[in-house]
Each structure stands twice: as structure tokens, then as C-alpha cells.
Length: 117
Image (cartoon, rainbow, N blue to C red):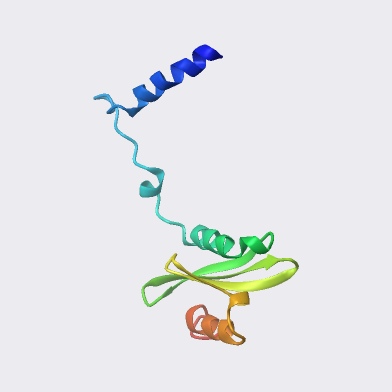
């Protein structure tokens, strides 16, 4: 066991050098794979409401609104279904934090086909 612990710095040193001539450096996973708007939206919504209990996402769809990716969906938490909108993988709007009537208007504007929910 002690020999393995002592050998770890040598293994790390071997990995940190430049790749051999016959090897190519692997691109970071995030740089190689395109961003998944649904996964990003779920992560952002979880971060926003995670303090309030466990979440289960029940429906979501990605829309293009004037060239911007908009994810509209819903989640269940504590026996209640709530809606959310994530714009461009950055801005998060969750129903419990919005004034009465704002979420239906936002869904009509950003999420509905032809402007209708």
C-alpha cells in the first residue's frame, strides 16, 4: 500500500508531459461535444430550486425563438407541477418565482407554436 502511495507522484508526472509523437492529445470533453440544451436547462433549474426538495422533470422541448435556443418545460416537486423557461442556456425562469400571470404570458411568447400554448 505504501509503495503505491509513493508511486502516485511518478504516475502523475508521466501523464502531465506532452504526448509522444505517435499520440495526440485528447480534446476536453466539453469542447468536443456540443451543448445539450435540455441537459443544460435541467442543470440550471435544479440549481435554482434544489433547496426546496427533489425534482422530477416531466416534459420539455427546445424552441428557436429569433435565433436563440429556448427550453420550455415542467418539473414536479413536492407533489406539484411547476413550469420553467431557460433562455440561451443562461437565464432561468421558474413559475414559483414569477408574479401571477407572468408564466402563461411568457409561454405564449417564447414556447408556443404560432404564439399559442
